[in-house]
Image 1 (spheres, helix red, strand yellow):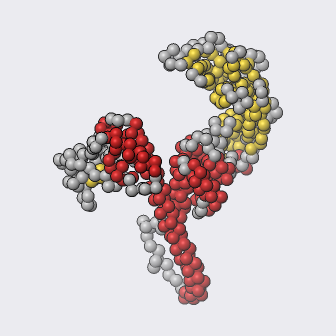
Image 2 (cartoon, rainbow, N blue to C red):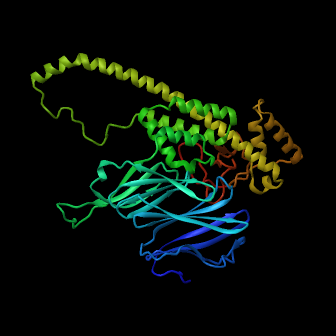
Image 3 (cartoon, rainbow, N blue to C red):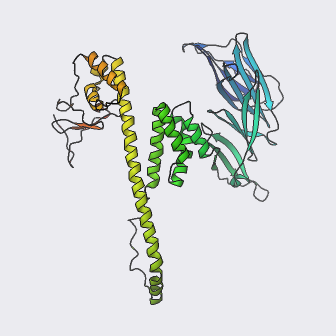
Length: 464
């Protein structure tokens, strides 16, 4: 397809979604200035509509090249409609364009953010969660632009990001920001050496934190996403604080416990499990001795004067050893408590997942027979909790629906019944041991997971 502009310099994908109506196109920037959205036909994808004509975002040929095109899909906080924010670098300026589709048609609002840098913008990055635009020029200065919506336009708040001393005399090439804006990464090379460019350049990647662990904790607790995998950069900030202080911040733990009492969300329980596991890791003493190294005892001669000095230092070293022993005992006690807490949280999450599996079994009549989910075993395993009224009602409905039918698991090697006595593994009467799936709790006997672990120290090939 033709680009529709003279001397294309950069492009990005544009996608707009409002209810069941979706449109897409290709944003193309030019070295001489104009920016357009070219229609892209997707007839094979259901629900997509094709633009009739190209959309002109900037039409002036001012000989300022367009680069670093980015497109952000968001919801207008005032008009409560879907919109698209397109940003790009044009020399020392940042070009922005806001696209909104209303019953009257397509609305295009565009402008430039001036006064950011004295040198051309080399790179531009966008933080997806909590929309913010980060720009960087050749001299290493980093700016943060936070959009604020008005009725029909945008206002950008400008902030300076403090740069580390290690990059003050270096040349910056590119910038990248993590998903939630916790970290920023810079790629740099050496600057001028004695007034000349160096012949050989060494590239370095610099990492900077944009948020404090306290800010990351607040965002994790108030996250609307409820997904720890998408909050990895924020989790890393909290992780480093726990590893450094060897404790979980009291304010974070108190607020987390309060939210668990209020909502009892699985996300919050998993977040708590993450914190306690990192605490357990911080309490474990690292291996400082290298057993492969030869012993130094007897390898050096010690004169009498050194022996006298050693005897004088025995008193002080004894007191230090006593304090170290007490500290180690405290760490061991705290480590044991932490490991017990990890076990209780894992048990809670396991039981919640079992109830979720039983709910899926209740909604799908044939799921037990087709997937070999140990329904009867799960119900017997969970029936010991008399305080969970919802669980009792669910088990009663499932038993009524199954009408005294049982779908027992059988060993694929000897066809014996596999009992449900442990949620991690199961053993048949002939000693064939199978691990259980952590999601469906069925014995992993498929081709991907097929393996038999016989009891004892020896592993043998199991035959029927």
